[in-house]
Image 1 (spheres, rainbow, N blue to C red):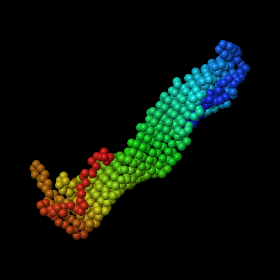
Image 2: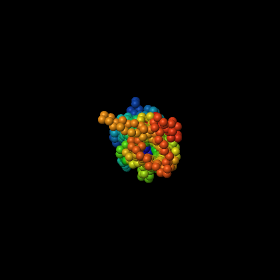
Image 3: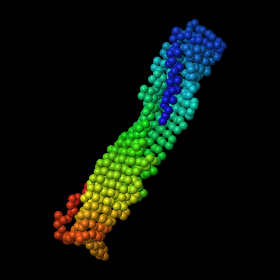
Image 4: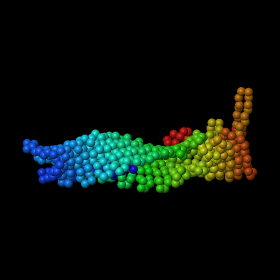
Length: 512
């Protein structure tokens, strides 16, 4: 990420000249004048030493060059003018004019200020330095740039704290290197924590990845980072948003907290929740807390809600299978379901529903201890129901119900409409046949009665929720009741219950 250690280095260089004990003006110090000055003068009244023309002197290991200078030994002040240059070891400082007060330990540099070492340089118009506070400031725009690379930082205001090895930039802060750019309102580095903080609207671009937040931090030692407040990361086909996005590269973990949203356009998938975690090393991700998965398909969209949703990916990041745990609900315009847990295999289109699942399709309600739903795009091809399987179809607006029950039921669909159910083991069906009478102006439908049929195996054919034909095996036991002779105890299969109240009507209802 950002090379904050390198930016810190030039901040320390800037303060080293003034903070060093070798540059603390006092009455015991001796200024050593070097050959080259054209004129020397002394004013007894003011106590000022005036040096003019190619001035150079050494003071405790620091060498200064300038066109002219005033040195006041009583007040311990130095004023230097014209082509000012201070050098110590590999550090060089340049400006048009300089003032230093040895008593207050404050310095100010004006005009084309430049501070540089062998790798970095700082340029600004005006630079102030307070040695007592160990604080350097530029207030009218500054630039920190690498001499050996394309690394550059600019800001309107910059504060440097060499003693604590920290810095603070504010006002249109811009940073860039070869593969990363960053713009923010305020940037702060605290050496003791090895952490950089950024405040205000912040945009970071690294390669094909774009990041945004309004507050955040980055630890240069652990390489951990966090984007806070309206945070987002967009990388090619993937987008993730949240109140907080935390990255732990050494562990290969990414974590989202609060209003988490993830979208992968390459797989037409979306996820919503309160907390999300992604492991690069183990190729899994999960989202929990009001978790919602959205699978956008060619003909419809499937919404799945659960307490927790889990994805297992392959090494290329493609989802192999998804799981939902606790209070699972599913909705699309053609089918809806509820169950305790679910497993969805992306490649086969097989969806396994566990613990008393219910699936609704049009006027049919399918139930059992376990279900396997086979999908082609968003269309159901068949559902295998096991353990106390049943299919109930509402007719005549809930006055009656056509019912199928057995040990195992395989139901087949066409365009998400139930067209056939094969019942294997203890097959039972209760249905209400109808008779249609056509007149010139209307079609009259009349219920004839109730058919009850038991057999070891049945094939039941349906049309719009009505039973249109039955094929039975092994001597069925059947009886027909006229409408006025239907017994209440015979009208329903064992364990009958119509669960319309818990059927999701819209995808928004999944979250209620």
